[in-house]
Image 1 (cartoon, rainbow, N blue to C red):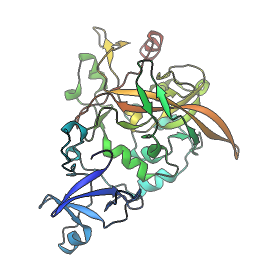
Image 2 (image 1 turned 180 degrees about the vertical axis):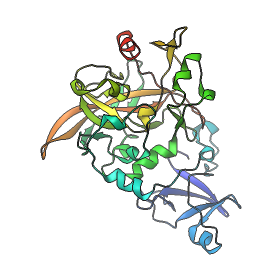
Image 3 (image 1 turned 30 degrees about the vertical axis):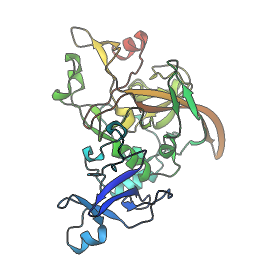
Image 4 (image 1 turned 60 degrees about the horizontal axis):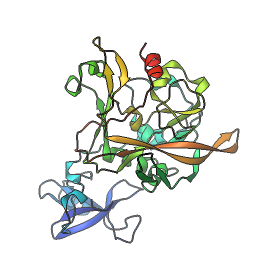
Length: 340
């Protein structure tokens, strides 16, 4: 991938490709096209080249296309400008049940959003939803945010992740970059993290470049006063741009359920293995709050409100397979509440 363009090897050269939003498969793409219109291409593991899918079917070796073994064109530029998609793990196709689930509007239930739970279907749902599962559609998006450090982040990378009715097209953006799995003993960084074994963790599914967006914190909008204790783990404030995971504070929150909400943090532990403070380092992601205006339905009428859409950017080059971590920014008070 070079400058957000994906290139693959053909038997007779290099070609730019893109994902067909209707089928989820790769097609040849002209540089001027937003949606690819060329022939469908698949990867041939024997020749290590990408070929037209009709040739694969004719040879009896039809195979689902993934972003495996894509590469960058030789432009004479330095390697750090490129992203080796050949590191990527295969992406499973969405089942019919999952495709239907992305489109289904379901009433919110905290009982299904617990530690260790995860459903990839939620990556294809709109990032803001009301308690009935209806999209809280974003109408305006802040263009740029400047942090206290002086770092500037723009919202251009966010737009594909908030596409209305994007469904599997949006879900595929997450799965192309991220992979959810169970935390194991081998993943423990400090002794206190043994308590995480069996719970969720998220790793890079391919190499992620410094400054690259990996997604937004998505879930159900919930007033803070209605949050139950078991919901606090995944509740994040959307009332402002404080960039803090929320703990029993006023205002509106998002009860996260997409893969971003399953990313872990780093704590300092006492001798008994109890988390007592937020660690100062160990993170490879930065959360940036972008102000948005979105329509929350009150009955059948839209009510325009301002929220903070929390987007996550890599703060360094991240190799495929590396666990992702971000600073929850829990206060001492929050730590005592969550870990009494």
